Length: 194
Picture 1 (spheres, rainbow, N blue to C red):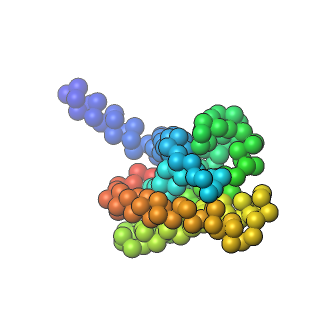
Picture 2: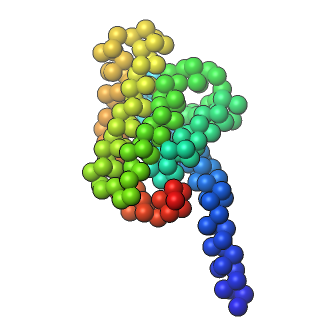
Picture 3: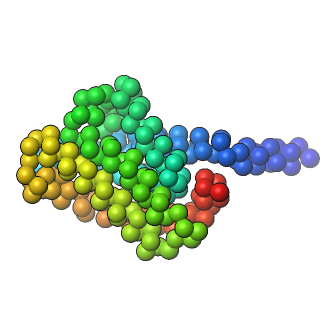
């Protein structure tokens, strides 16, 4: 009898939408932070390779528009307030105004866009891949545009340092994120979007 009661209590906890939303947002803030700590510096770009975009894609698809964007806005605000969540354990206005500033804003926009594109009842794998690819392109376009403004680069130079070095890794991340989301999409919609 005790086990049945405990199981029922746990199900009520999981079914509470506010609790689920909070857990989901906090999870993706933490995941994006951990993704920032996995970094590969590049000699040809002031922006390193990280795992962040992988988690941004999943945040948008799993959590939906409001919560997905909220998770990335929360990540951004924590870094702004001085918590070392950005790549290289950095934080503050210098990071937001530095080379990665455009990418950080892109995280919020991409999570919202990806959620909008994967919001149908049962998106197929091609729709998921397309949504993740378009969201990822948005991140890198905003990042490259910011680099162009910050360093007064020509468009071709901004593309060379802000987009091209990342393409192989982003293709791999899109592939893995798409496979994961295609397997959990229905359950995540029940938990976070219903």
